[in-house]
Image (cartoon, rainbow, N blue to C red; front, side):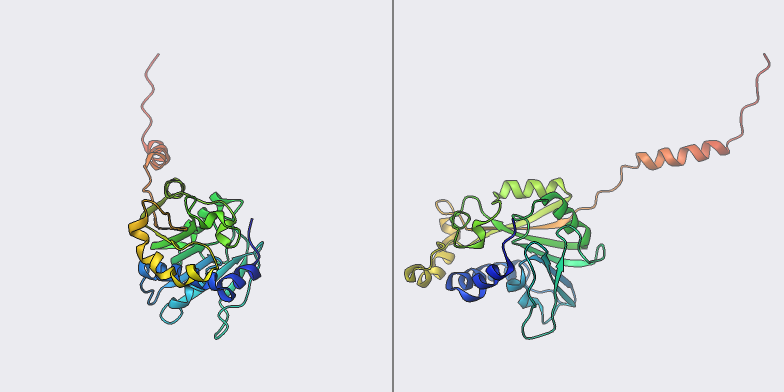
Length: 246
């Protein structure tokens, strides 16, 4: 079930916890994708807080927001790039996206397979998708105070298996949001420390979100169907053997 777009906006832009989450996730996304010069970058779900770094150098930036969630105009200081769309039917040509960020989309979808098929369709050759989902082992997926407490959380194995089954090739994964999902002053003041220690504490504390980057895998045809199709016309061109006398 998708959250309302106003609730997502209020969390990321009007709460201390949401601003801290935005800063942490954006830093991780920027680490995986440091630039997008001349590329087409799209986000699906509620990706706008994390697309801003690409507005200046990308050829095109699009923010796709599913109809059950709703849409807001973004960015507020420039031409609008937000688009309201059907969950599994996007107004994009096949193979035209270089980078696709999916956040607050996959875990909320009632048709995750069809959604991933649409992600695969719009990605171009050499393109990559970055999926950000709640980590089922983390604290954030258990808290109703954050958007990551809504929808279906994933483990790394679950997400990567689902991606592989739909012709994606996972190439990189990361975790973020080691800070507790609390508005209390102590946790807000020490949030940076928890994120810095996150990797070292991963054995005893799981990050709140899981990030998996995957590329589009295009399998070569086995050729069996083609050979069968071609063989029959060729056989038709061969001269028929002369009839043997009875």
